[in-house]
Every structure is written in structure tokens, then in C-alpha cells.
Image 1 (cartoon, rainbow, N blue to C red):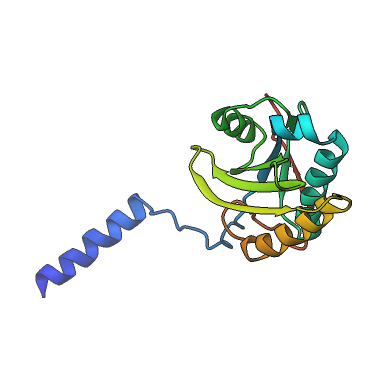
Image 2 (cartoon, rainbow, N blue to C red):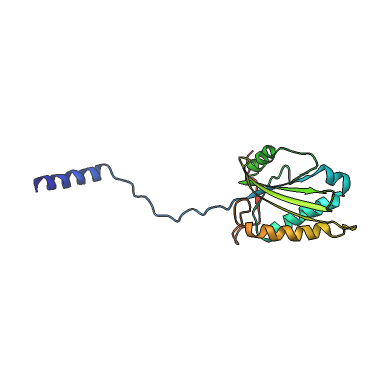
Length: 186
């Protein structure tokens, strides 16, 4: 009994002398959805055998689809979206994505294969450059290519739908804007 009473006295003195801070109960911090940085590449064959309008419509079609599904897109106010006919290393794009505050890269490639009118490939990469997934859709084969990019986009959006909200295509909560601005203070 004497030991128990002594422990209580020592405990009381220590508690009064060295108060232990009480951790406030707070709401868990909201997890910010992962934004994606979009870049586009126009292949050499697409440059030679098709038009820039087909390229731009295909890229815009993918971007508009993602926006309609509330995918959070990080935009760098300095560079906007990069659309290039030059082959740029994925590591360069992932560095740009990181600078824009994104957590992944979405690379859209528009090609003009010999036997098709258009081929659209979408690849998602994490910021280390690891390929997360890849989807491709093409259209063509006849004498006329009219509307080929629209048909390829329709195929591609069906393939992208199950990926919305997953790695590389994080969705914004309903209360948040569709486009995330790059962090300031560079």
C-alpha cells in the first residue's frame, strides 16, 4: 500500500510540475486528389501524312473528355500544355509535371500509321517515369478518313472510362475546381 500511495504522490507531483500537453482532436486533413499534367506528341508520320488540325482536334478531344469527367488537371501558367512534333523524353515531361504541381503525367500521342487514318495513344506515368497504364485506339482503313479522329476518340473514351479516378486520372471532388493551378513562388 505504501508503494502505491507513494506512486500516486510522485505521479501527482510530476503531472503538476511537468504538464503533458493534451493533443487536440481535429478533423483529419482532406486528401487532395492527384492532379495530372497533360502533354501531347505528334509523330513524324502524322506530320508527313496528316494535318495539324487532326492532331489538335484529337488532343482537344481527349482533354475535353477528361474535363467532362472532372479529372483534376495541373496547368503550368508559364508553359501551358506542351504539344510537340519533337520527340521529348518522358523524364523531361515528368519534370514539367512536378513543377506544375502534378502527381502524374498523361502523354497523348497522335500518329498516322500506313494502314489507318489516325491512332491515338494515351500513356500515364508517375513522376519517376514509370508507365502506369496505356490505352490506344485507331480508326481507318478505307479511302476516306473523314471523321476518323472522332471515331478513334469514341473508342478511346470507352477505354479510358474505367481508369477515371484511378492512378494517373484523379478526379476532383465536386466542390473543387476542375483545373488545378501550379503552386506559386517559383
